[in-house]
Every structure is written in structure tokens, then in C-alpha cells.
Length: 323
Ligand code: PMP
Image (cartoon, rainbow, N blue to C red; front, side, top):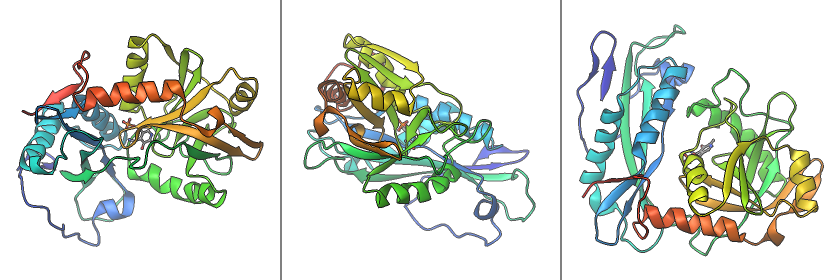
């Protein structure tokens, strides 16, 4: 779907996957005015297909668009575009039974030629899809994380809450640093003091204190994950207290050592829920739940996946049925 200044959204098309041709002076290549989303379509036991909370992705896409000075795509148009692609590619939505899904990647970018730094007058919105296997084919394994003090992902007033490529470009070096420390993922801390936990490279974090689960509050510099939001509700359904709050790295270490912080997990569309095992920082190294997936982590993981794959009732109306 195209957007042109003065004309708005026009020319929606469903076409076979093909390369785009790009002008070397396309503004996106130079000034990175682009945003994206990620969501999944799952097969249900009766063979029907549904996407998980596409309305929430559509609203986050609008927030990202506003921050990047781009036009907002109406929520209904976003959902219609995803639906049209899933209907077309239905055969690619994996069989019911596992955790496999069809991953959808909606994205929008400036599609104007010019070297002046200003919001573009033309944009292109596209959705592509790719089958995604189970994230943990050999069973759920905790990830090891590196607490990044040398780099920050986002600053107050910046673009951290938007899902835009620049945030990911800024994260690559820190991710390489995490890998050099022998860790799977980087954990981002706040930009000013490097003390408050924000999020993981591509997932939000949760801290389990017995039957109370806490996730870092939305400070404006982390992504408001849709999985994170769903778990605030789902955990309450299962009898846990769930809340947003502030967790510092000192607290993380101290509460693990004194046994009050029983589990830590990360959550996002790709892995749904991943336990955190070893934590490394300049301040030392410690391990959550003896390096095993925690009980609450796995209970929440199953509860959410059961809703997504249609094994459990969808009491919150999260699944968008496509028939
Ligand atoms: N934080 C970041 C930086 C991410 O890229 C993602 C993945 N979209 C998340 C959190 C989790 O968000 P969601 O649950 O909407 O996938």
C-alpha cells in the first residue's frame, strides 16, 4: 500500500514475493525513516487459522509512525493487509500440534528520492511472511545474558519505544560484546545511571518473586511488548500478582542471592517465553533457578501458548480468527 502527501493511502496490492528496486538516493537508505512489526498466525486444532492480537501491533505501529514523523496507517487497514496475506499463504501456516507458526513482518519506509533531511512525502507499507519453526526444537533452554554497561540502546526523549531499525542497528555491537562474554543475549540498562533494567535485545523481562511477578515499567526508552502486556493479565488469571516497577541490577543480584527472586524470564513474539539462566556483568556472575527453566516461567509459557494454538479458551478475545 502506498502513501503520498495530499492523496493518503492508495493502491493496495497483493503480489507474489519479489525484490524491490531501490533508487540509490531513496531517503530510507540515508536517514532510516522506517518502522516495522512482528506477529504470528497459528493453526488451531480444527484446522482454522488465527493471528494473536493484530490490533495491538497495529496500534504500536501507529505510535512508531508518529515518533518517526510518518503517516499513521489505520488499524483496520493494518489488520486487513495481514489477513489478506495469511489467507493467501494459508498453506504455509504449519500444522497444529507444535509451536510452529507463520511469522508476519509488516513494515513501512520512506519511498522518496532526495538527500534533504526532512520527513518524506511518499511511503510504502508492505507485509511479508515466513514460516517459523518452534523456537526451542530440543526443549526449552535458559538463555545466558550480559548486562550492558558500555552501550545503551535508547535515551530519554529518543526512539526506544518505537519499533524502528535504528534501535536494532544500535544494539548490534552490544550483542557482539555479549557474545564475546559467552552470553546469548544483551540486557539493556537505563541510559543515565546504567542501573535500572530495561529490556533484552528483542524481548521484555519479568522478575518472579514467589507469586508476584514484576516487569520493568515503560519509561519511554523500551518497547511496549505485546507479550509483556498479555502476561500482566494472564498471570493475574493464574493467581499471581503482576505489576510494572523498577528493578535495578543491584537488586537483581542481591535478591537472587538472598533467594527472594526465584525466577527471571524474557518474553516476546518470537520465543513467547524464555527462561534466563546465567547472568554476567562487570559486577560478577550469578545463576537463576539453578540454570533450569523455572516453574512459574513454564506455567505462564504453557498458558499463553495454549491460547495462541487454540488449546485453551481465548477469554480475553486476543485471537483474531481468519477461518
Ligand atoms: N523488546 C524489543 C526490543 C523487541 O524487539 C521485541 C520484539 N518485538 C520485544 C521487546 C517484545 O515485543 P513483543 O512481545 O511485542 O514481540
